[in-house]
Length: 314
Ligand code: SER
Image 1 (cartoon, rainbow, N blue to C red):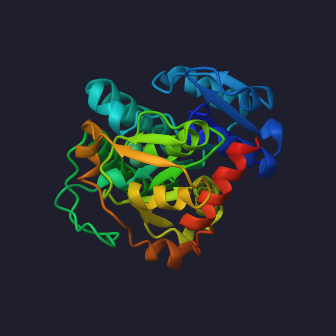
Image 2: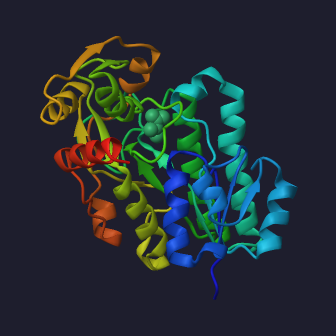
């Protein structure tokens, strides 16, 4: 069957890169990018693009029919820090956007759904190190509550209606092609730009705040591998733990100093510190490795070298 892929949220940090990869795989005309705002020129001019608010169920349905869409990647969401500022709006977008897409699959208009979860599903009572797939989950952020609830609904739609929905608990994602927006892990992207432009960075998290992170090429690889795996290999229909590396701002700064010896970092924790304090430091992703062969390509050293190379010579 010919696959036609629809990406909601294509202007975002993941969407920008995922659309490019999907267009390579499925052909430019078979990947429809969409966002509530205009996407980067590369995404928009590179193939079909639709302006869409995923909360507009009828408009979403019309686009699915217009292009005969078979798969949806639902990336439109508000991230952790923004969600704390826009509590009801974040809940509405993160939950009702998901329902609109899950319902399209339930009614058999599309055959496969990807929806991202996050390390934010964990909370202050979760074991912090090597956090298992199944453990205490008492998230206390709006974003975390929406991701945890979303996971439960994905599992429910799979079990009750046979919806082929797949999900990953992304760590903080680091890339040079697009800016993150409104997340707690964003420092790990900003630090590179400021290091190269100014030689110094003021970090909004404390120096010893360890968080799980991943380089974007691994983020894209994991997403595509999960979606391409045969359905019977996907044993977890809530969301898979996923890991590549873990570090603190201090450790990242030391690694950057190997490339930019004069680089300095200062620390001025803000409200995002409270969010970071509730998240794990490291993740056990053995189920993803076992079920569909997950293996990351990038560690801290390799990621840092590649970020600096690409930001310096775009
Ligand atoms: N990177 C996201 C955030 O910081 C977590 O999923 O909000």
